[in-house]
Amino acid sequence: MKRVALSAAAAALVVAAAGYAVESAKPDTSANAADAATIKDLSVTHHTSTPIKHVVVLFDENVSFDHYFGTYPDAANPAGEPAFHAKPGTPSVNGLTSTLLDHNRNKFNPTRLNRQQAVTCDQNHADKPEQQAYNHGLADKFVEFTDSGDCTAKFTGEYYRPGLVMDYYDGNTVTGLWNYAQRFALSDSFYGTQFGPSTPGAINLVSGQTHGAELTGGTTPTVSQGTMVGDPQPLYDDCHTGTVYANMTGKNVGDLMNAKGITWGWFQGGFKPTSRTSDGKAVCGAQHANVAGNATNDYIQHHEPFQYYKSTSNPHHLPPSSVAMIGKTDQANHQYDLTDFWNAADAGRMPEVSFLKARGFEDGHAGYSDPVDEQHFLVSSINHLQRLPQWKDTAVVIAYDDSDGWYDHQMPPIVFHSDDPANDALSADGMCGTADNPAIDTRCGYGPRLPLLVLSPYAKSNYVDNATTDQSSILAMIEDNWSLGRIGGGSADEFAGSLDNMFDFHSKPNNRPLLLDPDTGEPVHGH
Image 1 (cartoon, helix red, strand yellow):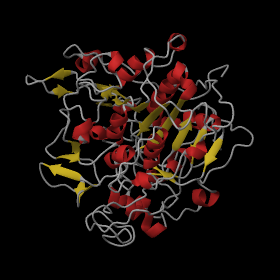
Image 2 (tube, rainbow, N blue to C red; image 1 turned 60 degrees about the vertical axis):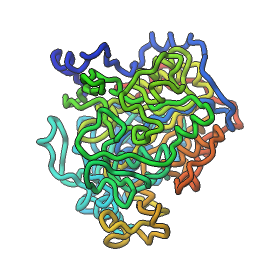
Image 3 (tube, one colour; image 1 turned 30 degrees about the vertical axis):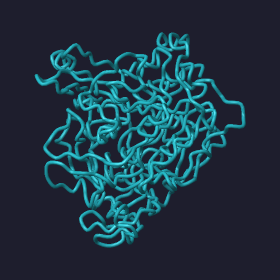
Image 4 (tube, rainbow, N blue to C red; image 1 turned 180 degrees about the horizontal axis):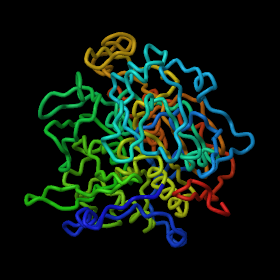
């Protein structure tokens, strides 16, 4: 599949505005790699509890574990698709067994999707339908509740068949991710902190707590009993759309890092304004097209969690005052365009903690993105990171915000009980177990199982972690590494499972880069 560019006229509209140019996320090339290797490390670092001095979280969209890794490490390897052959001794995962593949209790059996079917319909991933799909733990009602139905008319090139929600890719499409699992560490027991769509997943990543949401502008099921369960727009963002917004009270990890002087930032594609209104408000108008030619906005507002908190927001999308200030507190307030990360990294000033969010067409979200475009973002970014001097003490975490409703056979452990009559249906109508503390237990979780990979010179190699973890485990890893303390107020970081078992801090680190082809996901010759 070839990547599709916008027309010249459309591209001009995309990039014109107020002196701002929309740049790519610096795709991997030999020249870029060679230049990066000569960079002097000027980054600020503080004492850490492990050898890891930099954490980079690549936070993508809407994938269940079975959807990407259900048959790992066995790929079909048909002619004409990138090949994947597992190393001898590769561990198995809790994936799709022959019974689940051929005699599934759902209405349809899971079916392999090929590389030409990369662009598919978006599935139903609201919190209540996802609970209903698991049907009291039987996991047999996905077709009835989270299958999107025929949506082929919505976007050109979208693939649909009845029961699509059950289907999966293998190492011939998500080839890069499977190759990263071969070299580094993969978890098959990582879950969303709660059921539901993108914004709760992003909020849980940075605070472990979606209670404390305040709604502005109307009523919506996106916030229920003070808990965020849907995708309201961020109040503190000029580029929000619609008339219903939400903000979060309480603390997030940015507040904890600011208190300790840790350099950090959230870097999102399309955050840089394309223009400003007469009163100075930012306009986020950049767009790009996916491999099927469907254009979507680069900046997706409800994927930016720090814009929901007044303390860590950058409402007017102000740029950093200088490259040297990226990661530090200035007018940008730690919220940046994705290009700002590479500007800092290539100047030797990579922040200690960085969250990278792709432009919309590359974030992996079914409907407007896809695994082929997502792979291009992931591989280009990781190739570049491995060429930086900071790679020797960096941990890259690849994680996802929610499952999109895609089938995953593993019933998640329920650690948050809830009795929200509008949104709960896991154990009974209006019930997800029995809420012990209605003040904070108004979310049902853990939610569906999601992919998680850890890439680092210190990551265990060709390793599958079976320990139960969730999105707040990434938060807890950052908190523990820099001794930040906990969020408090009912945050899931209090009891989050540890990611430590995915690292080996006792053996000599393996600093040799694993460079992949961004288009095929296959190893570059010599690596």
